[in-house]
Length: 245
Image 1 (cartoon, rainbow, N blue to C red):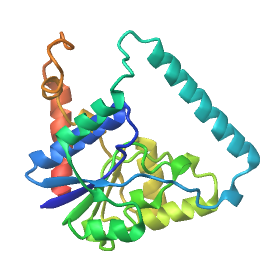
Image 2 (image 1 turned 120 degrees about the vertical axis):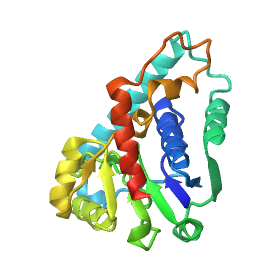
Image 3 (image 1 turned 120 degrees about the horizontal axis):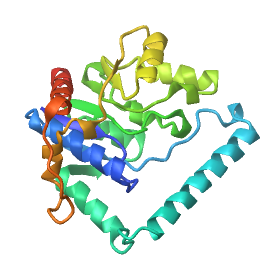
Image 4 (image 1 turned 180 degrees about the vertical axis):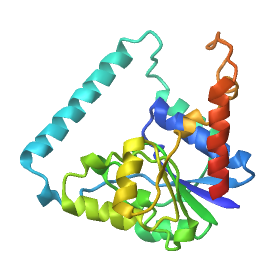
């Protein structure tokens, strides 16, 4: 089965890269082809008028503070080498998954979707109301039976306006197979959509420690692991993903 994957990959951080590698790897392990949809996000608020100026300033201030904190951590870390960092992230992504031709507009995304039997969105915070982008709800796939949501993070409490909530409900209702990453998000969405929404593991936790060890250079890792209960939980979640594909 040809599978399209819609998730973040242009944000070069470890969490984003690892969840992408893990989810694409698990799809392949189930015997399916997987292609990452080459979309560069440009999120826009549903309605700017619904947000106060104080909300805007608060969001900008928090974003700036987080960037300053991350910069401080990186520049003061013995292990951080800025030279070639972007190239290394790109190489890691290209090693684990192939990319589709670039698709940024709705018609381009619709054309891209025609190449796949199913399209999966997830995980990361692609459904967050704080950076809302309807394309990550697969609004360009017009057959709900071909749409799967696996572990996107949403945090519905961040949907501060009625319009935002209505838009999330409208888009999420168009999925036959839907799961999210947090228990409270699953509970809220179940109420909003009047259907059972499951909470599942982040894709990075679908792999056992031994499986992750294969991706780590021997010079970096000095640890040994066993699957144990963690491995059993990961296998049960992988079975759940497989039933939806």
